[in-house]
Image (tube, rainbow, N blue to C red; front, side, top):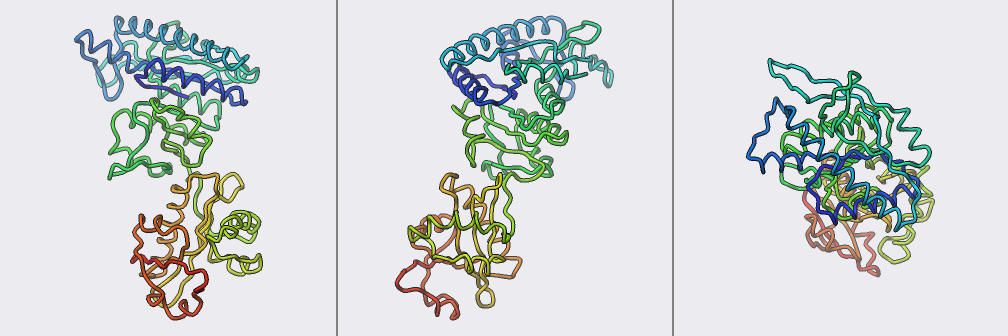
Amino acid sequence: MLSDSDQTDSSVSRLVEDLVLLNALGVHLVLIQSTRHAIDSYIGEQGLESAYHGHRRITDQPLLNRIVDLVSQNRLTFRGLFMRAQHRNRGKSSLISGNFVSAKPLGIHEGVNHQFTGSVRRIDASGIRRQLEIGSVVYLDHLAHSPAGELYNLASEEVAAETAVALNADKLILMGETPHCTDTEGERISELALALVGTTRSHQNNEMQRRLDAAERAVRGGVGRCHLLGAGIDGAILTELMTTDGTGTLIASQPAAPVRQARVDDLPGLIHLLAPMEEQGALVQRSRDKLEAEINHFYVIEQDGRILGSAALYPLETGCAELAALAVDHATTEQSIGTKLLKHIEEQARTLSIQTLFVLTTQASDWFKERGFEMSSVEALPENRQALYNYQRNSLILKKEL
């Protein structure tokens, strides 16, 4: 996990509390601390200007000396917060630092001498694993020595990505000032497929671009998932890891919870999902036999073997279809999963040349209105659907022109 942010003492303290909790739950943690914001502040206070070649800061000897001071200060501060959090939570883990990263100089590129700016030569993955296996938390920074004993300033995002790849980590978490990626309209991107990183990168700020580059390197190197989070958001890590919606942007080679066509072997999960809403009267009751007969109409979102949501598309007369059985597991964030299912149903309808999508609901009319549906009537339904309308349920009818 990489943290790169100009955080307050209280926000860092809360972050450390969350990390200690995760470690107590058995999560193996490798932490990489960045001091980029502290370096920028120092340079600004001194009235200096950073020298860059491309996106890499050139580190001369005076700057390297100052970075050593900043890294040491951060390490001691973090160690103190870690010890306090351990005491409060009665933890027993050790915080371990060491020469787990070896460096090499960037050297001279295009006639520019990068001096004491370097890159990762090697990660001592076996050494890190030995510490993790005994329950330690490994703490790394972005300063590393070369085999010749020279000290170099590395990019913290590179250290994080290369460490995650070397460890074949399940997850890489990159924290920074910017809480998530945004689309061209400024809306949060909660999930981003690896293939779309390139096109998304162009309209992110510099900080997020650095994290996207590291995330892409990690995922292409075999890391399962990479999370981009805001370091200033209280509880961001726990929310991201323990809820479906999270607060940041998840990057994976494939979407974390894609919508797919339902299968017969999904029946137990579908029944479990739909039953509570059927009992509440929010959905029409369907027997197992009816569900099995209509399974090809259903789409589901599955994660870790659990059906998180479902929706069905029933074509009616020419150009019309009905959205039905839109349901979301009560333990998930309804807006994210439900919206994803609705968008998928609309896409499927368009491929079938459907122009009008109807939905009948007893309890969710406002939710559908917020997503472009308008109130309609029984008379607007196609004749074959009017004949099946249940006046006893008295469902509201909404429609959306696609």
